Amino acid sequence: MARDEELDPAARDALEACGHLYGSGSVPALRLLRQYAAARTWAAAKSLLPLTGHAGIGCDAALAGAPLAAKSRMMGANHEFDQLATMATALLNLNAVVA
Image 1: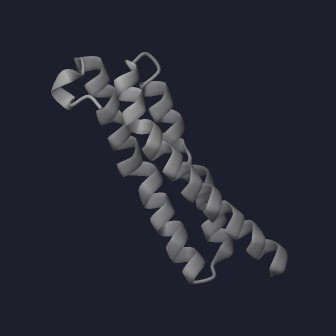
Image 2: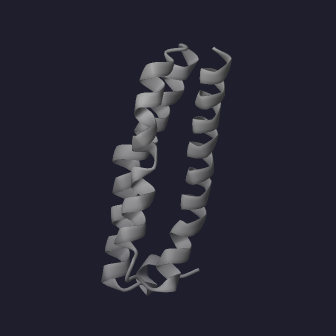
């Protein structure tokens, strides 16, 4: 995998944008969602679901023209985050059926 200094400036900027997107939107949304779910405040938890996927969409757009080295750096993180958001969605939907 390429190190930061081996990436061109546009790729570094794209990766930095991904970090900002995840750090400011999706990660806090998942943390709040978890807290609402623990308190069984399902309506509030469900209202946060749309925010969890926004970072991945924005990150894909930021990396659209980046070289493969930069894209591959985020592919694993995006995949894991997508799995986490999908699991949270499934659990909330399951609770809605059971409740």
